Image (cartoon, rainbow, N blue to C red; front, side, top):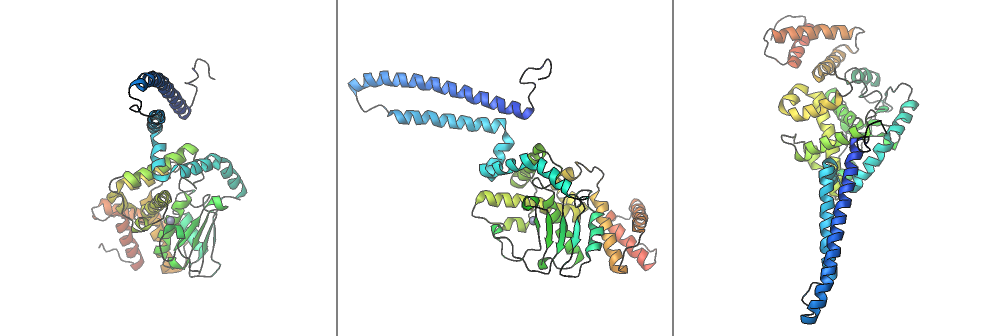
Length: 378
Ligand SMILES: [Zn+2]
C-alpha cells in the first residue's frame, strides 16, 4: 500500500466500486435481518395474542419471510444497477452466461495474445488462392495491407484464403443462403478470412467484404491490442449504440438475424452491426461520416486509439487508385505512391479552387483525366 493512502484509496476504481457494493449489500442485509428479527418477535407475540382471539387471521410466517427476501433481491439488483450500470446493461441484453464467458476470455486474453504474437514470425498476413479463382492474392495483399490501418490486417489476420466453394450461412444466424466470406477467429486457433463463391470476383465487392470481415478480426473479442477494461468498454459502446442509439444504420442483414435464444440473437446482431459499420467506414467514408456521424465516430475512435493519423478518405482514394491502375495496366508501378500523392495534391487544389466535388469524386476525375491525357475540367 502506498504511503499516506487509506486502504480504499489504494484500490483501483473497479475494486473500489466492488468494495462499495459489497458493503452496501452487507448493510442492507443487516437492516433486513433486524427488521426480520423484529417482525418475528412481533409476529409471535401477536400470534399468541391473536391466537387466543382469532386464530387464522394472521398471514402465515413463510409468506412474511418471502416478502422480505423479495425486497432484498430488489435491493441487490438496485445496487448492481447503480454500482456497475454498464455491466447491468450488458447482462440485460446478452444474459449473465454470455457476459461471464466473455469476461473469462478477456481475463486470459493477454497471455494468449502474447503467445499467439510470439508464434507469428512478423505478424504478416498470408494470402492464398488454392482453387485458382480470378483474384491475384499477391496483388490483393499489396492492396489491403497498404490501405487499411497498420495492425488492422497484419498482426490481426493470420491468413486470407480465396476458395471456389459454396458455403451456407451458419445455422445460428437463421438466414438461408450462401455466405460471401467467414472470419474464423483466434479462439479456434488462428484468425482466418475465408472467401467463398458467394463473394464473386468483382474487386469492388471483394474489397467491401474484406472490410467487413476484418472488422470481426478487430472487435472486442479478437483485437490483439486491448486490455480487459477496453474490451468491456468497446462492447458496451457498440451494444448501446445498437440497442439504444438514435439514427442507427438500418442494415437488412443485421435485422434478418434470428435465433431461438434471444441473448444469442442479440449478441450476433451487435457483432454484425460492428462489422457492417466498419465496412461503411472504409468503403464510403465521406458519405458515412455525413449521414451517420455517431457510427462513424464510434469506428474512428477505436481505430485511431493506436493509429491517430489514419484518414479513411485518403485510404479509400488509395484503394480506388490501386484498383483502377491495376485494371488499366495489369500491374502496379514501383512508384505508385508518388503518382498517388501527385494526383491527390492536384485533387485538393481542384476542390480548393471551387470544383464543388467531394475530394473522392474530384480524385476520380483527375485520375480519368490523367489516363486520357486531357486536362479538361468536368
Ligand atoms: Zn459478419
